[in-house]
View 1: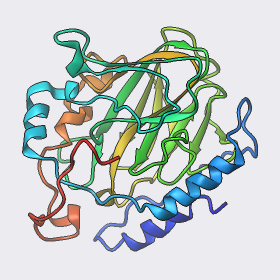
View 2 (view 1 turned 90 degrees about the vertical axis):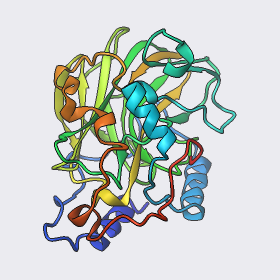
View 3 (view 1 turned 45 degrees about the vertical axis):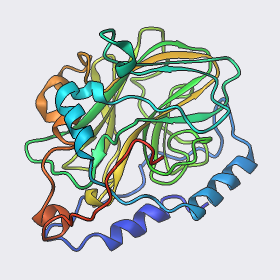
View 4 (view 1 turned 180 degrees about the vertical axis):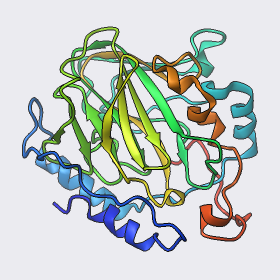
Length: 306
């Protein structure tokens, strides 16, 4: 089904800098042909392929000044989860800005009839036009209160077919918490991740991080960093704006922390991992954007780009 071909081609086109980015290759684990518990219909795979052909990925964009002001004022609380433009989502989403002095995290409660849907952050967590000086990576966490269906935690580049779970289609990664398999541009059954993660219980926290130096996506479990799930992805980094992507199906209840509250993985509480220290920070120039200054006519990011 052409797995990974899109990313490989993009990497070939973008390796003209003085130092080549880390080499990307498929994860070494054997890929499963079928999912362990649930399968999306074939027609949805075909619809997603058609969607990706019809809608190219958006270029990275500048963050408007009024959003930068919000980030400077609110920090990680400026991030939240958008309602999808997809009727199959059934439930409620409460973002930090809706709490009026309450919890500094986003809360998602889905109903039993909720179908497969991908929820995206309202702002990118990895912004291609912004520098990484003094930063190690970016990170967010999901505290799970209930999972009677499925939750998947990962990343995606917009536009992404939001009737598909993270990791199933182009430039998207996901850890699916029903079978603990990892996915990157993988519409099949995924790959085994780690024996350290076998089941999810109420109160568990799954974190998702991206490391700038290696292009690695990794996960944490109740504050413990697990092995890298994928390496060398979203490179060259200036090609993409990457969003947090959380898949949900069935009745679930969880909170998403972008840094408005204390992270369970202690290292992420350091400035080197804070999203607000990267997105909307210094514009990348020179080697970061392949030379020269940023064009003032570059598109500005808005809340409605998905």
